[in-house]
Length: 382
Image (cartoon, rainbow, N blue to C red; front, top):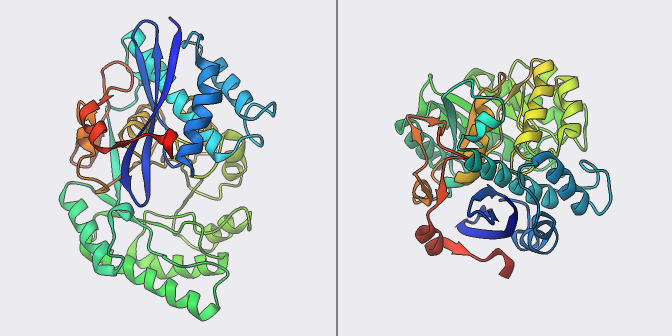
């Protein structure tokens, strides 16, 4: 079996970003799908795949995922070290999406689900948390509360919001405190809306200084957060997250932006976060995600894949998560578009706040061509 074509497909979603899929086709008619959304530039990613990475795959046997991954990384980095300093987020996203598609293709060729190829599933369903942030256009406390209330009513036992709109460390001190206080109020109102039993997570998107983060953590401690995510910018303050963790009992999570296991190593070794969040769209794909999780397991650190994604990356994240001893919970981009579940056949297998692990070959779904045509766009034209 040989790869004969690589295509890039797009679906219009929201002002927060669209979904970009890669499709790897073979001479035997077997096709693999991956997702390469949120790279930062859909058009440039599509051109990278079409003109450089896709031609690297054409003519190759798709069964050698690791050697193909290394060759893609070498080509993308133009001769740099196969993974790490030589790759941008955009290139890493393209390679991660293609790597997902290779696993999907191999699972279909062998007639087994991808989790079998990754070592076997330890669970048959995954607990989800509903990230309501992308669905909320009314950014007042009541807007967040209504979305969170609806998510819990649908069966999700955990929600996450990003409440600190406009906050930046460069702001005047009084203005920063005003915006942070508004964010804290959003979280309080959401806790009231979802009740005492649902889990509550807060994403700070690196907007706080360590001093502000400690203040926020202490203010929110009575609300019993499941975690405070990315409170500080580790590039600007490498020890900031550890300082926040040491100063408060609120659990922390981090790592969504990191590319490859080398970037996760200091985060794991410092135990700065109790949970790390590799994203299969950016970290290198499923096999690199497996290596990252194994690194975390040695330090007794939990893994919760970052996944504000479309349905293909969600399935890829699910197959990976099913195999991890240190998996905790998977992110789900709740309420972003009404037609999401129908974009795949079969429809996305979510029941009562859990995702059922597909047992069919590959990732377990294909795109619905009619619905994709209705909402689609050509990333190469961007």
